[in-house]
Amino acid sequence: MGDDESAGRTRRRVVRRQRPRIIGASLLLMGHQTCEALVPVAIGLAIDRAVATGEVSALLLAVGGFVALFAVLNTCYRWFARLARTAIVDEAHLLRVELARRLLLPGGRASARHRGELLTIASSDADQVSRAVVWVAGLAGAVAALGVSCVVLIGIDVRLGLLLIVTAVVTTVALNTLSPMLARRVTGQQESLAAASALATDLVTGLRVVHGLRAQETAIGRYRTVSRAAEAAGIRSGTAASLQLGATVLAATVVLVVAVLAAGLLAVDGTIGIGAFVAAVGAAQFIAEPLSAAGLYLRFGAAALASSGRVGAVLHDGDGSTAPVPSGSPAKPSVTLEIPVVGRTGVVADPASVGALHDALRGDRRGPVAVRWVGGSAPTVHVEPARAHLFGGTVEDNLTLGRPAGTGGDVGAALVAAGAADIVDALPGGTGATLRDRGLSLSGGQRQRLALARALHTDPPALVLTDPTTALDPVTEEEVADGLLALRHRDDGPDRATVVVTTSPILLDRTELVLFVREDGEVVAGTHRTLLGADPDYRRRVLG
Image (cartoon, rainbow, N blue to C red; front, side, top):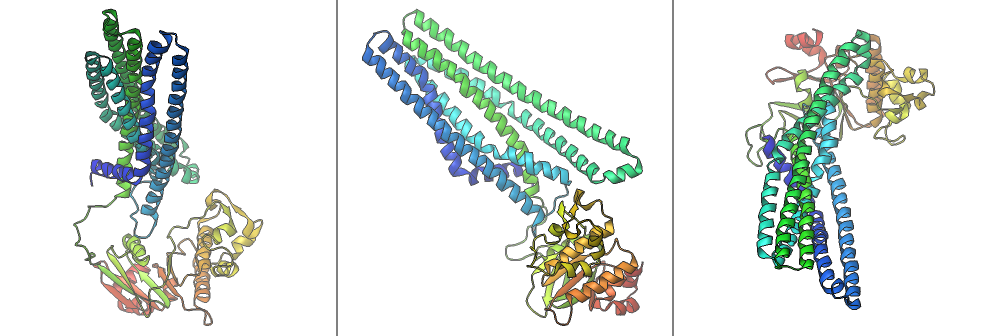
């Protein structure tokens, strides 16, 4: 899907989803702007019928009219602002939820973008897209204000009204021609900002490595380069926005000058009275406000369109990238794995296919790998990520993440099985110790064992582990393999399925069944020792 199509699709969905609020906000802002446009008219009427005549009753009536007019004006704006702000906040939240679902939930497609760039898209870009709500309502209000002002001017004098209408239309069209340039520059600014954010994330994540390699100056130089590129893009975007703002002010000034000159000439020759002159100049002067608002909302629209393309590229990642599949006929998988619902199963596969295997184990049937559970109905599956990731907080918070203490397995037993009990014992405060910097103060093996203990504590009917012992020495790996077997598959325990995706001979030797996926997609089943003796490809993959 192209960027323009993706941007349009995203923006249309935003408008459609917030349609009731947009309609309400548009009507309220149109009411506010209509009242604003009627203020000069009210002043002109007050001059002609109250000030010029000196009638007290007419003056009191004019004051009451002003109070009523401004009461409606303020009420409309307050409720417009409330509806619009609610829609913006709600839509930004919905977009962030959609982005998170697209990237994290089963069947979602993880984008190839860097985490730092995704963070920018899910924050500033989502906020920009949500402002499309104000863009629609604001333009509706500006159009209403211009329409009422033009009707007022035509009512005063047709020639004056037509002259100002033509001037307003020409200036508005000229302002709109600047929007594509602004959209391009906003896109460049957001992309440069995302690149800087991505590099900053990389550098902070690998700060220890940078120090170890004494590459601080190189890292600083790289960040300085992308930061200056982001600065230059921001200046270009700001220049374009300032150019449009300046053009808006100039356009409003042109309309005002034309109005004053034309209305002054009509007043001099007696065609219109002093009240009509004040109303005409006031209406023409007010035209500057909706023209300025039109320029502002066009900038909102340009920024929203630019960000819609970036958000849509993630939300619709992969849409249309493959040949269409007839409805009800999912693509035939190239690899099918039959896994028992009870027991210990090992999977030896190409690392490039592990992601598709994880999706299939989570229940996604659209990928190149299919999983068929044999011996019973498909169990609830927990797929532990291959990369051990700990969060800020206490050790207990990490171990019970998603399964509060008492609702999953025994935390102590999970620590022993994962070979992590000694890690906790060595920490001040034990499980109450706080892990700082996402556990980076621990070694890779320690983080891996704590992550394994967390997975074991969830105690799901089916647990999928991917290379859970790569950072461990052989002796510790033996202990973890035995502990895993003892905890998950004890004789007096419930039926459990444990699937280990690995090439570790120690772990594979503890399984009851190994599924070996060849490069051509053929699946060979057998025990670890049988495959070692009978299949040279398996032996080469496992033993190197």
